[in-house]
Each structure stands twice: as structure tokens, then as C-alpha cells.
Length: 194
Image 1: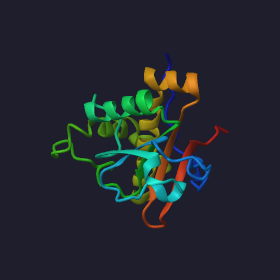
Image 2 (image 1 turned 30 degrees about the horizontal axis):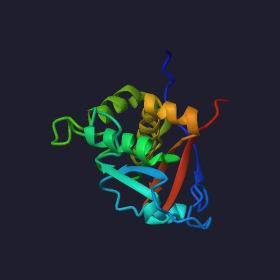
Image 3 (image 1 turned 90 degrees about the vertical axis):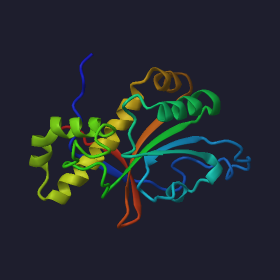
Image 4 (image 1 turned 135 degrees about the vertical axis):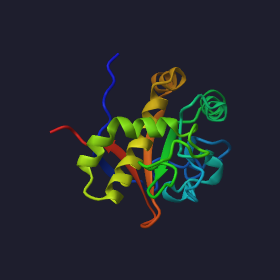
């Protein structure tokens, strides 16, 4: 199977209240989560704010760099529980700008090196293209943070259990980016090739 190269430019659609309808707004009790939120442990981001969901409507899992990689039993267990027991309707992978874990210069010999190997590998494979697309080091970091969130969402979409949930009940997988400066959250979609 051919691997689609990751995009270097995304359309950013603001995440707004109602993107994922709240079950409590429909007059139903929010008795179980309908969203699995995979976020970064350093984001300090309150997940319910942009979506307007109640806390009970999300199952939140955090790790360094919002990674779905490295055969991490904790993340894989959260995904399987959300899919098979809770039958969530959405999975959100949310990265954030300014993440100190997901940077182009992530040191391989740091204590987080083994965990972030997939991040280092992703950057190494795309460095020339990212460097060409970025006009400043800050642009480079923003592009790379977006690539990482998008890549984690794509990795999730390639797992058999997620593919089954998409096929059988319409599960949606989203890649979001949070901007702590503007306090806005954006949904990422690859820009169409021209």
C-alpha cells in the first residue's frame, strides 16, 4: 500500500461550539463520553471550552507530545475502551503551538528521547521540505506541530479497530491545533493540491 506523504500546508477551520453536538443540549443526560480526546500532557488546555461540551462527554487521555505511537499500552487501552465500551462518536488528536516536546530540535539523548523517537523520525524525514516551507524558526515549529497532530490522527485512522468503527458506525477522527496565545482551537485539513 502506498504511503501518502504528509501535507506541509493545512486549512485551519475554527473549532466552534456545536461541531460535536452536546447530548445535554438535546435534552439527554450526558451519561457517557462521546469524544476521546488525545492531548499533550503539557498543554494546560481545557478541552470542553471550544466544543461547548460537558466534562462528562469527553474521555481525556494525555501524554508527552499527544502521540499515538510506540506501542504505548496506556494510549492503546484508552482507544480500545473508548471504541469498544463507550462507542465514542469522535476521536480528537489535539496538538498545541509552542509544545516543547514536539520541536524540530528535540534531542535524541534527552530523557524523553525514546518516547519521542517517532517525532524525531518524522522531522528527519521532512526537514528539507519543512525548512523550505518555513520563513522563520517559529514558522518551522508551527508547521511541525501541525504535522505531528495530523500524523497522529492518520496513524489512528490506520488501526483496524478505528477503521471498523468508521465503517460500522461513522466514527470521525479529527486533528486539532490549540493556539495558547490566541486561545483558539483549529481543525486541520490538508490543503488541496493545486
